[in-house]
Image (tube, rainbow, N blue to C red; front, side):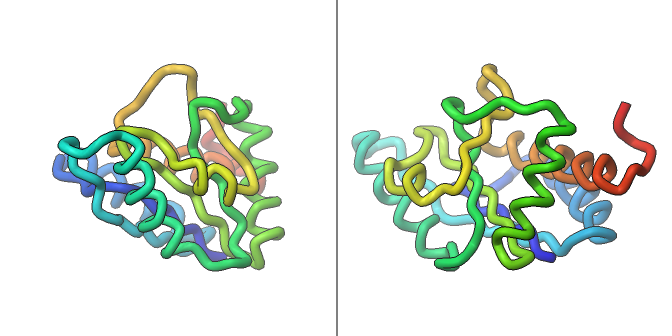
Length: 154
């Protein structure tokens, strides 16, 4: 199985990179993890143009048959148990490959949303797209622990 996280921008904070590395290591028991960073659009261009640029960059990195979940404030909220079922089903539907998309600070282009098989809302609160990487990796790790009945989730 392979988990791909495709996102706009880079992580500069060491503590975030350390957390991402930790959950990537923990997930290696269940799946390989690949994080693909595409350049985020500059703040100096109009938002619609930035969304279009980032959307095209992200879409170019997704295989046609991949099962894609976008992280979206307008997506479905789930419990950890429901998310666990979606993660496992996503791997099954995507030929053992699941792609999670994290947009940049402007959100997601309409083309990215249209390409998605599912839309997930992590929370009604807003997180930085950098912190979202760490949060979603932890939630995927939790999903596997729940699926296999292992201690971690309480």
